[in-house]
Amino acid sequence: MLSDVEIWNLAVDQLGERTIASFSGTDPMSVKARRIYPQCRDLLLRSHPWVFAMWKSEWPSLTPQMNPTMQFPTVNEGESIYLLPSDSLRIVRVGSEEHGKGIEYQILDRFLIAPYTGPIPVRYVRRVTNPNKFTPDFIELLTLLIVMRVSDDLKEIHRSHGEFIKRFSESQLVDIGENLSNPPNAYVETESDILEGDSWLGVRV
Image (cartoon, rainbow, N blue to C red; front, side, top):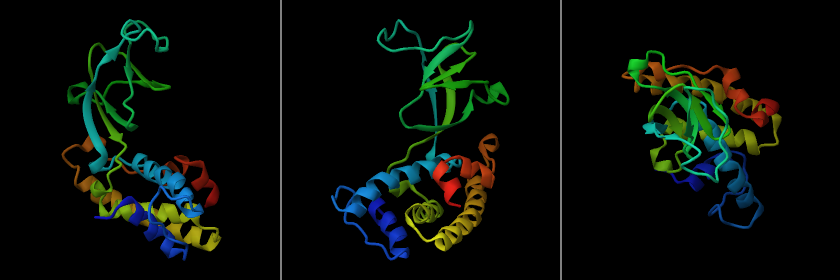
């Protein structure tokens, strides 16, 4: 499988830009890669409940008494507070199958607030930093995002954008097919969903 650096180099090589040996370099391209790559990766991860990035766990409820130094939001009677994991990029479902369409919730800062008592089941998209877990479709989409971010050529940006939208739709169908055992988590983003996820992408296209 490809490393993070190799994925970056696949993208910039299409533009005739200088490739890098690592993200820790001090040359301008390495500095740019160190800043842009994780932004593009997380944007793409958040854009769809990819099978390889989905995670299910139970989050314990919190009270101010557990951590007196932490600032907690004010909640209504019957609501509980849950701390978002540091690797959480997008909540897909709160509650188990017995809760029907799920439990209503709201996000305040780094907390999830829900009318629930005790540990709460959550399915979410987590930040995946190991590129060996990426699918070939995800890698192709990631390189297209990087091209759109790095290129100064408007024709290239529009070409990559068109290819991205096409490949994104195709990749969703494949990914959803692999996740048919969990239909509540299978849905298709629209182009506006993708663009709203990051301001620079909306501006550049």
